[in-house]
Length: 78
Image (cartoon, rainbow, N blue to C red):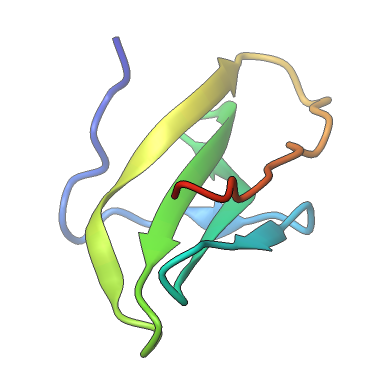
C-alpha cells in the first residue's frame, strides 16, 4: 500500500513526465518523484481547464535510484 504524502511534505519532481489527452478534453499526466528516499511514479488527472480531478495516484514505487518513465494513453471511451 502506498504511503500518502502529508501536507507540508517536500517531494522532488523528476524529469520523466509524460501526458496524454483524454476524451472529455482533459488530460492525465505521470511523473517521477522522490518520496522518503524511494522513487515513485505518480499520476494525476486534470480537466479541460487544467484543474486537478481527484487525488494523485501511485503507479509504481521503487526503493532504488533507477526508474523508467511511464507510458500512458488516453482511450476513446475515457
